Amino acid sequence: MKTLSKLITLTFIASVLLFTSDLKAQTTPANALRLSIGADAGLPTGNLRIGSNFVLGGTIRLHYGISDNFAVTLTSGADHFFSKTIPGTNFKYNSFGVIPIKAGIKEFFVPNIYFAAEAGIGIEQVDSGHANTKMILSPALGYADKHWDFGVRYENYSGQSDNYGFVALRLAYGFALFTK
Image 1 (cartoon, rainbow, N blue to C red):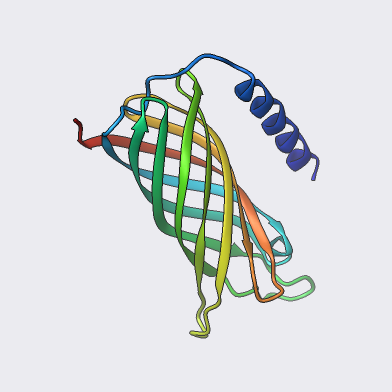
Image 2 (image 1 turned 90 degrees about the vertical axis):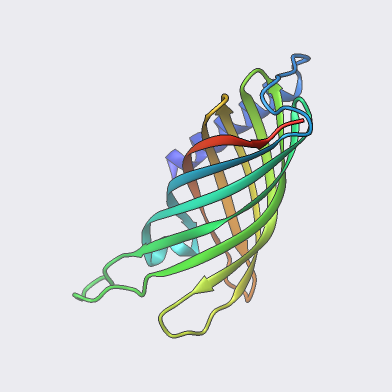
């Protein structure tokens, strides 16, 4: 829990510094379409900590530059929540996955440093076949250059009276699909 508190504090401080800066980055070219493919690894939060100890996933993200420092994004992929052993037994909780479908924004406030926010839905994939659809809200901070994107994000899933989330690191490789 101390690690999560430190991460939230660090994110808040970085956000304040980014919002108060007048520098603008040139990382997202206007009228350009980019694609990034990434791997995510994270730690569960909320109710999910009871039955899971690790999250691993992959994402594919389209970026369209509205201006040289602002882009809209469309993201999908898959996240898998690995299960813990049920206390006092040799059995594990059921592991499951979520397929996120999100739209969002990405703003570069200083060269190569960005704040992103996404919202969408997550479709749970479970062995029993019964899948819920959750609402997703996901803020992120990161560093991106012409090809590489390193970010940290919090992803919150809510719905059906079962809310959970995770904090994850993302490493992605990106490239231009077309430019103006």
